Image (cartoon, rainbow, N blue to C red; front, side, top):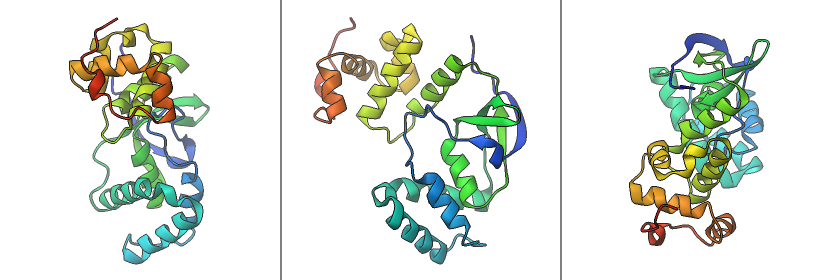
Length: 212
């Protein structure tokens, strides 16, 4: 089924939306706690004082995720100043409840600045469509680690056999043919175990692998 349609765009209450369960770029488990603690401070502007307060909360909760929070902060500043250029993508999961499919960082940035509503494109998806689209929409983003890419590809392969071929991988990730071959190789042993353990972090040596 073609999942490329934009969907109906509406203003949705943020309290009606939950984060994406299938995003390959895993956000910190502490996100909800950190954002809620920051909002308790009721800052009217995102200035240095507000950033210092956020950093202090992060330091107490999840210092190892500082880089992720810095990115969310920068995005929140941009949205606060310029607004959100494009809507997030959500899917209904119950009566007046939705889940993020794509745009989770914009969702969290909007929450961080205290927005009550967010522009969202609503698309009705079954569970398999939701998972495939959630993963594939995020695969081409910068900053994914090799492990995040490979594990996302393994899940995609379990949902859609087209991802066993290099062309589908090449298009989903926005990468070269040779790197698509290398990532496919990483979904099989012994490379998969090496990726999971962190002993394989660079696939350049696998780029000449042939399609199986």
